[in-house]
Image (cartoon, rainbow, N blue to C red):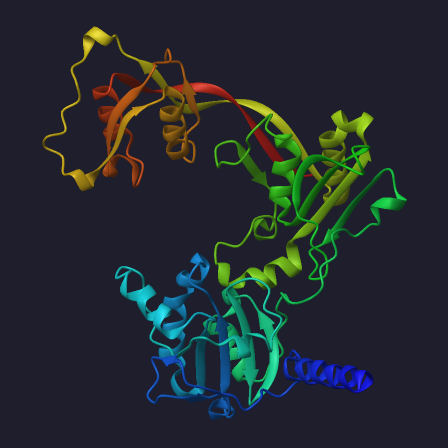
Amino acid sequence: MKRLVILMLWVAIGITRANTQQLHPGDRLPDLVFRNVLNYQVDSLRLTDFKEKLLIIDFWNTRCVACFKAFPKLDSLKKYFGDRIEILLVNNESKVFTQDFFNKRPLLYKPGVPMITDAKKLSDLFPVDGYPYTVWVQNGIVKSYSGVHAVTKETVQEFIAGRILGFRDPTLIRFASSVDYSKHDYFSSIARCSDSINIGSTEAVKVKMGKAVSIASNCYSIANLYRKAYNENGKYRFNYHYNFLLNVRELFKYEYPSNKDSLDQWLQSYAYSYELMLPVAKSEHAYRIMQEDLGRYFNLKAEVQFKLTESLVLRRRNPSDFKRQEISNMASDSIISFRQITFDQFVRELSVRIEKSYPFFVEAVPLESVSCNIRYKSLFPLNIPNLQQDIYAAGFYLAKERRIIPVLIVSDK
């Protein structure tokens, strides 16, 4: 009897595994029916109803901001291609919860394409690893997996035309390194961006029980590799247009594309991963070694120069020289109001908004607290005369001056 129970248990396990076996490219989509659907003309949706067209299944959840941003694009693609394609949004949350989620957020874009809710039996068929996650199905056959950024007018047209597209596959097993750390004390590696390796992104951190230091940069642009190498973990911040200059031919190869729809193809062609590990006793040389590695591999010249650059300087006015800022004529929704915040926090708030456009220097004597009202139109977009008025009313000068700043220049040799 005991042997019979064990045998039945193994049979049950086998049936469960068979029922949840994941699909791979080349497999046929099963004939599943779903009843918890939204934005659909009938109460139930059958996957095989779309077997004669391109079906794009996009998995999302209510905590995924990137998913929300993709909704308008998916709607517009459906309108553009019409009956040639179908787009399904799929989540594992209940129909009531999903409806309530959108009802409570009237400003959030609500997609018009069909939506399957409470769809765990569908998501279990695919190796969903993060959201948004997209499955491409053509004529009932699973063809490919991708991120939702790869779903564009161009890629859909290519799919309909029957062309094979090289998406970065988000389902592949990812190794933590291209090298076995346990067998090396010192190595550096530069490799093309790979679907099968994800080394992460770290500054100089201790590894191997504190015996070594490692730097890792996964699928970086060449420009960002140079920024990281020469920033030296906070020594500099070569992150802005005024302090990082690229003097190279074919500039598109060095920076991420502005059109994120082409990111997959760009990463495959022009992105690189860099790893460095060395004994902890040599950790002070880590970024110099990274700089030398990049120079040898990419045949580029990089140097830090000090240049006179138009900057913004914050100074404090004489406390007896100003009156409390008047905001009675400002609508409450037109200002950002800071009340009794620390001086350091005030400076951080300004830095975040100013440094994208100008170098920012602080020469003001710290205060215990700061209260200030800044108009939206002073910041979005950055309007220096307006911001100067707001800062002045709060007891500070914001002066435009030319200051010497470090600039990283990367050039062809």
